[in-house]
Image (cartoon, rainbow, N blue to C red):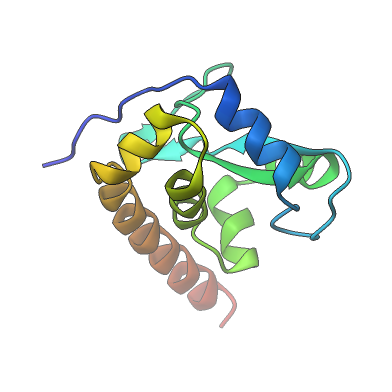
Length: 131
């Protein structure tokens, strides 16, 4: 059974992610912002909406724009990272109590598995197309 994702808003967490981390793609520390992960186990969150501030990762402005200009899953597959695992690691150290509580309650466990499966199927599809 898929648990409904709790939507938590936290300006404190967003600022902490942007100010204290480097871009996950290029490792730049210039103009880093919290990039929301838009795809979850319930499907795409949708244009103009965000799934909550618990599911964010640090990206510089340029890499963030690149991520939005293409398929999100493919973007992270090319980087060979599970963005939910990154968000989960950040949540475990967040200065925000609400975000940290989500981590302690296991709200990242199902989305991590979902993204692992999603990326595995995307990689196998991409590899078979290249044959």
